[in-house]
Image 1 (cartoon, rainbow, N blue to C red):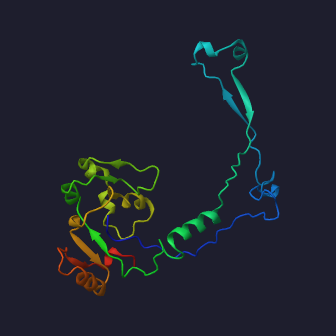
Image 2 (image 1 turned 180 degrees about the vertical axis):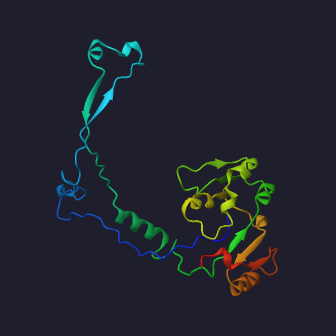
Image 3 (image 1 turned 60 degrees about the vertical axis):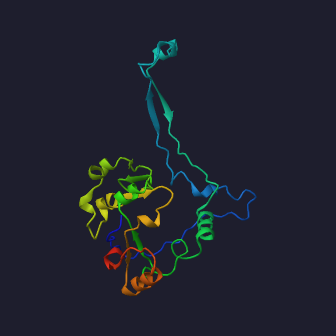
Length: 220
């Protein structure tokens, strides 16, 4: 959903580091020095109790003699085969080096194509909306547009600074399956008058929607 974005302080990029063992035959094995008794202390033992509600067929004489047992708690280390450097290099190869998705042109040449929920539905497009960023594993998705009102936190939508608790509900999304046809576009928003003029010239002679300048739709 378009609107004014949160203002965030510039952050210093942190380098991605990884452990390498080029002199070893099995280079993916972590060095024994990475985990020590000082850095990964044992947590003692944990008591587990038998469930008295189990089926009687799962009970035997030995269980009657004691109702619980103790198990030493040990740390679990998962050795991933794919390291962070490999992941980053793969993303760069796919999207281009530098910039988001290979784009390095800044915001002034980015335009927003605007449509409406009702227009997308009129054209028979399958739509859903989510109560937060659809990339999260805990979002809730809805197809029934009657749920659009109560499911979305509309109070956070006009906010200029939507950090903190407002961040996730402010990232609610409306998604159209496969593609949005050009006939569904009701407007084009540009950051600067110059960009708006170029867009208007490119669309001249076509059944084009209005092109407007709205700097507040972009990051400061």
